[in-house]
Image (cartoon, rainbow, N blue to C red; front, top):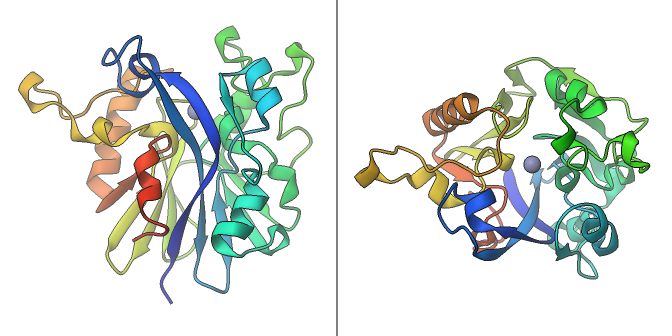
Amino acid sequence: MDYKIIPLNTGTITLDQGAYCTLGRGVGTKVDTPSTAWCITDGKEHFLVDTGMCNTERANKWHHEGFQPKGGRIDEQLMSRAGIRPEAISAVFFTHLHWDHCSNMKLFRNARYYVQARELEFALNPTLPPYYRSYEAPILGIEAPFTGCSFITVDGDYAYNDAITFFPTPGHSVGHQSVAVRTAKGTVVIAGDAVFVEENMEGDPGQLLEFIPIGRYINYFEMWNSFKEIKRRAALVLPGHDARVFNKSSYP
Ligand SMILES: [Zn+2]
């Protein structure tokens, strides 16, 4: 049976468009973006890609203006959108460990957690101070969602099974990865924050830009190469902070 990919909306984060979504385009324009996680299911086995954002109070105190509505927490979204209980999730594949991608991960107590080794290493010790909040570093006096969790770390490409593959897409974060799912309609790439919005992949041919960079990155070269790798693999790209992914209730 083929996999179905269901978008889950764990809340809204208000971002400056030009500073986060499309570099230099839309500076000063505030946009409400979804904090998206994904369920992959074939009806028998159920997986998550990321677990979304935290509650409103915590988001506003430590991160960005935004909110998590009632029913927006990842386990509530999973039940209302996919009819799946948290205990039934057998694995969570993390694109990266920023706060809005791994909050409440401990709710999935039967799941194995997969992440790139480089991402986990940096998340546990974010040596660049502007990233303290992104990873909810201990120096802030708060506890990160992944504190005390054990992960299965992967290094580079990893085939979870014959239909689901993770591959490195660094640039937004040190050890970011994307998840490729082979479906009846071709390969769907769940891009995490390697791609914030559709426009990143559309580029701007008039400016000789194959892609439009995201605004939040730790390595510009890697970000660009990750766009290329995603384009090479994907029949369809699912971005991490684009409300239009909710125009459909499932993919492909
Ligand atoms: Zn991120």
